[in-house]
Image (cartoon, rainbow, N blue to C red; front, side, top):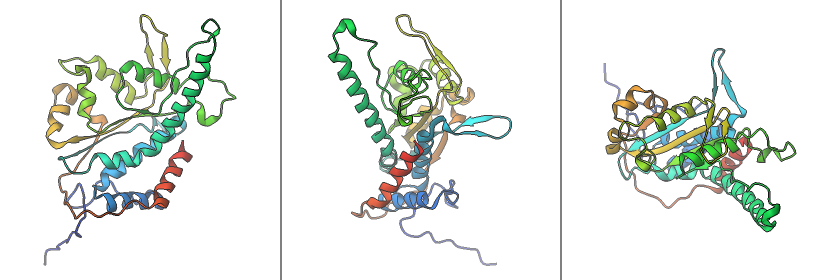
Amino acid sequence: MDEKITIKPKGSLSLNKQRPELPIDGLPASIQNYINAVCGIYHCPREFVTTAVLATASTAIGKKVVVNEGIYKNPLVLWFVSVARSGSNKSYPMKLVTQPLRRIDEELYAEYKREYDDWKAIPAKDRADEPKCPAIVLDDCTDERRSEILFMNNDTNEPQNRPVAKRGNKRGAIGIYPELKGMFDSKNQYQNGGTSAISKLLRLFDCEDIKVDRKNGFTMLIKDPFFNIIGDLQTGMLRSTFGSELFMTNGLNQRFLFSVAEDIEYPHRSHETLPYSIACEWAQTVRMLY
């Protein structure tokens, strides 16, 4: 019997030499078109784009949808890491796909800035509490700020006459890390055997209620926190980031989905750009889900 030979078309990229590990045929046609267009134009592994699409969509949905399979109720919390050597175009697709979330974040900030300016214009003796800035995207922030954002996103005391799109009690949040190791190395908080910060992350993934007490601050009870993570990592940094015995035994690594690109070809670059209609349809989809 002749051995079947599969000829890979020039310029194809995949994480797996046999077939892609994350099929997209179950997604709506418009989303498949978007994923294929991004991959075709920016020459990046399809799985990297797919994970960014899933993380963006689930963040926009937030806590409005919960998967109930009969025993467990699971919010759409997703943690993804794209792993490939330097120059594999890991970061830009993630930046491109998550851009609609950043636009929403900019709107939240603009509303906060207006509220803050109005608050600042009131004489100090007549001011109420200083307004806080909500967010849906987290980049470089402290654990305290992250807790504040998650609390605001879940504030059930918000006025019910506020537009639904502006209420926080169903809103998700996502940490976007172009170099994920930086998150773990920040302030050395995950090193030297420390487990407190890791315990916080594990509880976030499981959406467990978190009570935050600070000596000089307001006590916050965060009900059902929703926090996604997406980041990328160079292949050589995988062991130093996730290879500790602590991470392999306490369940942290098992909560991430690792997309490891081992079979990448580098086709000739073109000067094509993503068609406006396709980019606009994706942005509208994210806005609709939000």
